[in-house]
Image (cartoon, rainbow, N blue to C red):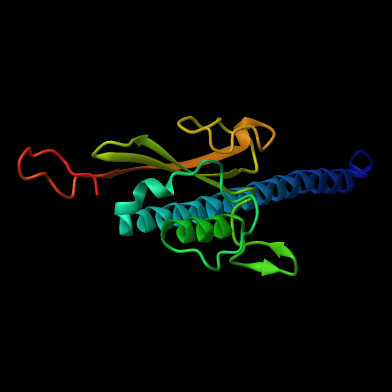
Length: 185
């Protein structure tokens, strides 16, 4: 009996140590789950913003060249009153990228972290080809995106930059009767 004194205490301490390591593992898993959830929410928001601008360009395809951006949109909220057509669409998209759709006090919360948008003209002749890009800052480094320079070098580590691109092609709406060539609207 004397040789077994204190074994219950040692077993209890080992059980507590194993349980503590297990709980730390669960806490780490919970943290990673929250990061993944935030990344997924940002991706979903980027998809909505990308589709939103593609639809606006498609609805105003005769003025599609007016949608090409000279610089990145989403850096600051703008006043859109008095604007029409493509200028209004770009201004409203800029405000959505800047997060103006949802606020809490003075903080704009309606978009991804550091959201930016660009529309690039790839081919001005018919069929017209554009690339619409939405970029934002991810939470963890992965792989630097290719295919666009939109938002490049704005998020510190390029591996934190996320990008969603959509090629947009508008075909010829009208052919010249004599030559059969595409008439640019």
